[in-house]
Length: 409
Ligand code: AMP
Ligand code: MG
Image (tube, rainbow, N blue to C red; front, side, top):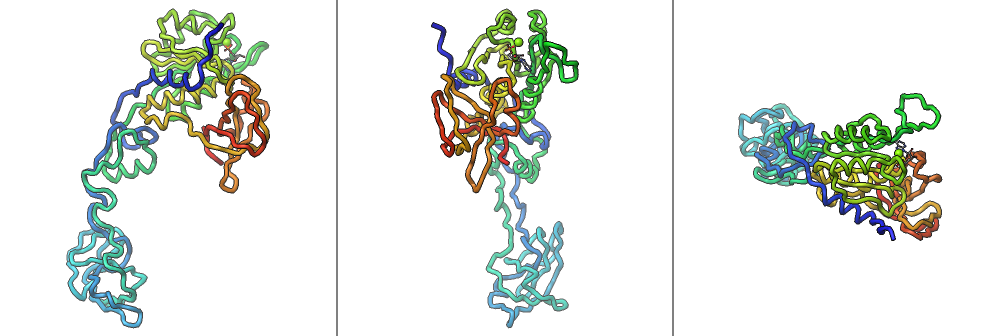
C-alpha cells in the first residue's frame, strides 16, 4: 500500500512549521508600505500637538455667546487674526473674539469656536448669530494620539493609513520585517522562453511568469532564473545558484516521470525532505524540503497546479516569513452562492478557479468551464478558488466555500 496522501491542511501545517520570520530592518517610511511592522511604535508627542480650531471662524468665550441668536446677536470686539501655523499674540478676554482659521492654535482665554457661517462681520466687531455649544469646534491636544501611547503594534500591516499616521508622528525610519526574495526556476526540456521560437515538441515557460507575478502581487521580490533542462548537472547548478535567495520555487520535474530529476538532485545536495504529494486537485505532486536551511518548494509543472499550489502553500509561508500574524497567513474564506450546479466526482479535494462577484450585497460564484490543470484560460478573470470536498454535489443557488485571492469587482 502506498502512503496515504497528506491532506492540504496537514501539508500546510508541515510547511509552516519550517518557516520563521526573516530579519527586521529599519527602512525609510515609504519603503514600509506593504510590509509588516516589527515593533510597536510609541508616539513621542501628542497629536494634535496643541488645541487647534476645527473650523474657520471666531475663537471666543462661550459665556459671551450662550444667549445669542439671529435676532439678538452677541457683539464681540475682534482682537486678532490667527492664520494656521502662527502663534496667537493676544488672549481673548470677556466681550472679545479672535478671527481663527482651521488648524490655527486656539488663543488663551477662548474656549469655543463659532463657525464663520454663524457670524456677521461688522467692522472691528463680529456679531455671533448662533450659539455654539461650549468647547465646540476645538480639536483637543492629544485627542487623536497621546504622547507615550503605542499607536501601532508589532505585526501590524503597514498600509497607506499607517504610513500617514507614522508620518504624523515624525517616524522617518520604521522597523519592518524583511520580505523574502524568491528564486523561481522552471525545469523541462520542452520549455522555451516567451521570446523564443516555438518549435515542434516545445511549450512556452509560463510558470516562471505566473509564479513571479504571484510573488509581486503578494509583496515579495521574485528572482527569475533561466530554464534548466532535464539534466541532473544543469538542475544542480540552477538549484545552487537559487540558494542565494530566501525561498526557492521550482516547477516541474517532481512527478514520477523518467526525467523528473529535481528530487534526486535535492537529495544529493542534502535536502531535508518534509513532504511529497498532497490529496488535492490540482496540485498533487507538491514537494517541500529545506536545503541549507532555506525553504524549497518543488511545485507541480502543470501551469494551473503551480499557481494553485502557490496560493495554498507558498503564499502562507511567504507571509509568515514576512512577519504577518497567523490569522493573516492563509487566503480569506468566504461563503458564496453558486450560479450553476457543480460536482466533485474525484477522491481528492478540488480547488476550482472561480469568478466571485457581489450582487445586491450577496456573493455569487461561477467557475469557468475547462478546469484542466493545463488550462490557463480557467484562471482568466478569476479572483477565487471554490473548495469542493470529494463527492460534493451542489445545485445552482447552493452555498459554497471560496478562498479569495483577488479583488471583488
Ligand atoms: P512535469 O511535472 O515536469 O512532468 O510537468 C508537468 C506538465 O507541466 C508537463 O505537461 C509540462 O510540460 C508542464 N510544464 C512544466 N513546466 C512548465 C512551465 N515552466 N511552464 C508551462 N508548463 C510547464
Ligand atoms: Mg518536466
